Length: 327
Image (cartoon, rainbow, N blue to C red):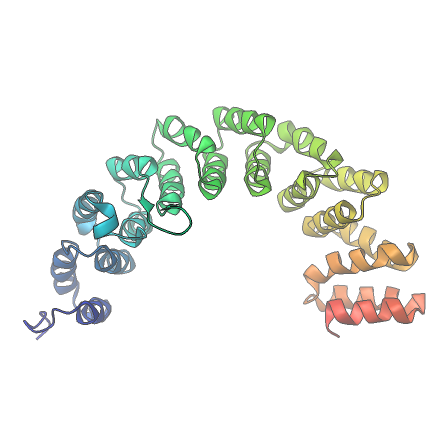
């Protein structure tokens, strides 16, 4: 008998039953998950939502939405930490069936929970996921809802909002992100997300904006910009990074620039790094090897690096190579 037995009322028993529904007939799974989505415990609602997403039960989307809005009532008691609400949104994304009221409510939800030395906003990840969901669902007012999150109290939410705007890809999203970069942020990770999003929207337009930060030697933004340029693999990125490398004397920033070069993953960028290993002063070889080690599992590349190291006939460089490449 697949129905939940009367005795199976404990939290653990309910979780076990939800997991067992993975192999139940669709009609049975749908009926039972609908009941579990009505549970007062947010964690169990989240388990049921995740299973609904995994099973592709699109008929449960209205129940998912109803559960989400219910968990907004006395949320610290019903859904401490927001696992239920978060998994409901993730399930809607997995099903590719959307409810705007859920996403907008999630974007606007703040859930301060008791903690020491001060309360913690447990809804920060939820706001970020809802920002992505609203953009993914092609909501015509996505920018109106997501844009203000660039000024959210939580840095993780600000970063996710920037990433969501990058996925939007519109000129208006680019303008919002450019403004955020100009205004700045105390957290480099937020500006990093803005840089990546800008380069996703329009590399030609925004590469100079990101490249301008390579001159920042103190705040960490130079390194953030280098990594964003490398990850974007934008045309012209190698020339910008190598020029910045030659013009930079700060060791940490130079190292970050070389990692950006390695992230370009082109023959030209690899050749530049290997040439540093082969010809540069020993002080420059260690960061070059660190950057190249991002691709240490590429046997052909590792062999080229080893050949350059061997030709130097330096025990110190050989030791660095062995440490970075583990070979």
